[in-house]
Length: 111
Ligand SMILES: [Zn+2]
Image (tube, rainbow, N blue to C red; front, side, top):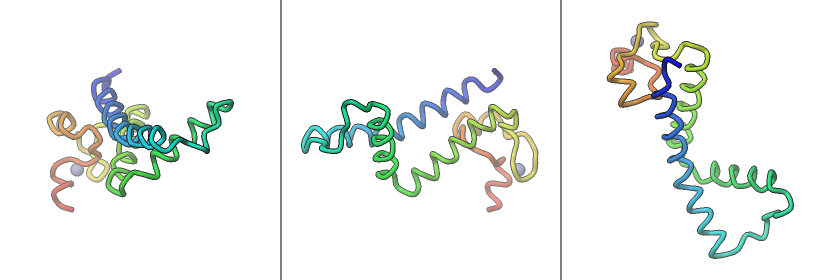
């Protein structure tokens, strides 16, 4: 896989973004108990936890999550690393710093 390191960086970023909030929710559940938890239905509980995490995210974090998701899709579809505006390759140094980038530096700065 050509962009394996970028994929790993993106997944790591997403995990840390969600993980921060998952810890808060876990702490809240420990403090107050979670009356809504359904121990016999782990899948439902997991969905509930995921929804609770998304609920806590700020707009900026949701935006970043969306960008990360799109970048992962672009790795799969083979369009990753190409600027969505001008179609030129995004330099590797930029992708290393910002793996979810979908624009080259020139197009990014012109916005
Ligand atoms: Zn561009």
